Image (cartoon, rainbow, N blue to C red; front, side):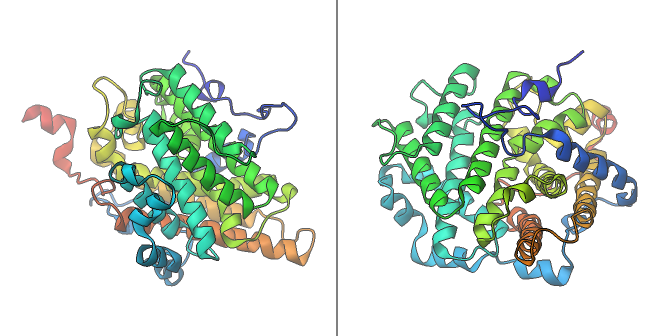
Length: 408
């Protein structure tokens, strides 16, 4: 029997921090599994017309059109950043001007991501800190798991060597969590990039609460472990849709963003509220909507960048490989699954307690739910309006079927 990805990931109800003194945030798989079950139940009501090819207009979002259309241009702080700062000044301020050409893609995507997914971020200072850390996260992902920046690998970091990648990731997480007055030492390019990530996290920490920041970092750790688990045994992680989803929910890096919505709007949930199963189920439904929609728009990039003989870690590819679907069938099912998670999100919202501890907590929860809805809807615009070389809707047709191609 193939190993359970949950066992390969160090994520579960007993996952502890390095001191072993507390259970880590979002480590209980129960709310995740509840979101998956709710989406599975909703799938039958999300069936698409079999006679046409799905388009982005078929995607369901958890806000009315009159509300989500207001998010189409992203946060005003993003527009301000492009006008007053931009990539060159951003890297110069961090002593990385000589690396601008290589860092530009990550700075751009990090700022677009935060600008669209955190539409209501309350200040330019918060936007800068969140975008800087998100850009660093994209950078670390490429350092260890993609091959976009081979120049940054002086030998100690390589996705082909799991031990080296794990050592780097753990050093990066330790640097980000560090509470010392000085950035991590070292003069190499990689050490300088770690210092950038450290500085961005320190900025975010100063604008957050300790438990909210802990939740962000716990889920970033889980993201890294999921990426490593996928590299160690991609066949186990893609053997079927359920196994894939268990890993994708973590290595999509969306749960950290869900937690960061609290910081973005400066409405922090009490610990017992953030730990509530219905609140976490809501975050997981949002996470799967984002990750699976990202898979649709990233399919061409993921397939083009895959190693020969290496299973493609993408929902459409898993549906084709594990369930024998033709490309157009896989696209249709992927859209249906995204829409099922929109249903699961709205169901989870209904399951929230009607009242919490006080009117202030009630207000914070309502603001958190709206921020998650804006995150999901903003991601749709992020995918459809940004970086067309990286995100594009698959151009499938009935002629893409394996039987047709074999006949030709």
